[in-house]
Image (cartoon, rainbow, N blue to C red):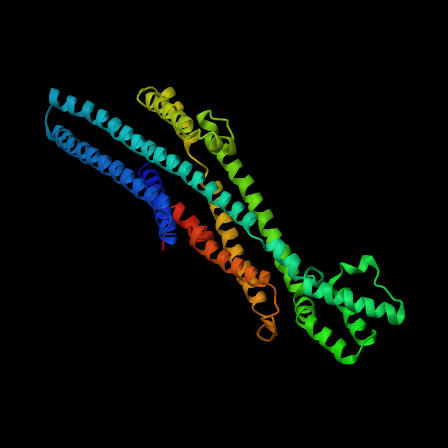
Length: 391
C-alpha cells in the first residue's frame, strides 16, 4: 500500500514537472506559466495538509503503540490497553482514509489541469490553422514557378511569338502555354530562329533571361515547398481532430457530451467545470461512507476520473513531433529559397513575391520555434517523467 501511495505521489509530482518544463520551453506563454504556478500551489497545499495529518496520526499511533507494548509486559490486561487496541484499529482506518483522500485530491488537480492543458493545446492548433491559412505560400509559389505569370515575360513572349509566326507560321499550342518548361523552351527557340535583327532578339532574350533562369532552376524546388506545406496543413487538420477526440474521452466520465469545437464556440467551459465539481462532490460523498461497497464505488469514481496517461503522452508527443517536423520543413524551405545561384545577378528582376516567400518562411520558423513549441521533452524521457522515473 505504501509503495502504491508513493508511486501515485511521484506520478503527480512528475505531472507537475512536465508542465513546468513545458512552461520553461515557452517563456512567452503566460497562460501555461500561470497554469503551472497554480498547479504547484495546489499540489504543495495538498501535500502539506497530508503531511500535517500524517504527523498527527503518527504521533497518536506512537502513543497507542506504547500502551499496547506495555500491555505485553503487564500481568493482566487493563481497560486502557483494550482502548488502545481499538484506537489503533481506528487510527489505521483514519490513515488509510487520509491516504485515499490525498490521492483523490491529486487526481482532481491532475484532471483539472489536464483539462486546461487540452484547452490550451487546442488553441495552439487553431492558431496553426490560421497561420497556414493566412500565409500566401500557395499564391507565391504558383506565381514564381511559372514564367507566364510575369508581365514582362508575357509581353516579350508575345512579341517573340509574333516574330516566330512571321518566319515559320508556327504557333505554340494553347495546352502547352501553361507549362513553364515548354514556355521557356519556346521563348528560347523563338528568340533564336524568329524574325528580327539579332541585336533586337538578343535584347529581348536578355529581358527575360532572369525570369527564365529562375523559373527553370527553381520550379522543382518551389513545388517541394508547395506540396510539403500542403502536407503540414493536412497534418494540422489531423491533429485538430485528435484533440477533439481527446477532449470527448476526457470529459465523458463527467457526463458532458458536447464536442470541443462547440464548447469553445459557445464558451461553455463553466458548464464543464460545473460538471467536474458535481462529480467531485459525489465522489467525496461516497468516500466518506465506511462500508466496503462505498469504498469500491469511490474507487470507480476515481478510476473514471483518472485520465489515461498513455493517451495523454501519445497526444503531447504527437503535437511536439508535429511542431518539430514543421520547424524542420520550414528550415529546409529557407535553404531552398536561399540556394538560387543567380540571385545576386538577377536581384533587380526577381518579383516581389520571392521576397514575400522568404519572409513568410522566416516568420514560420519563428512561430514554430516560439509560439507553438510547448515541450522540449519527447519520447521515452517524457514517459519516464509522467510515470515518476528519473535518472
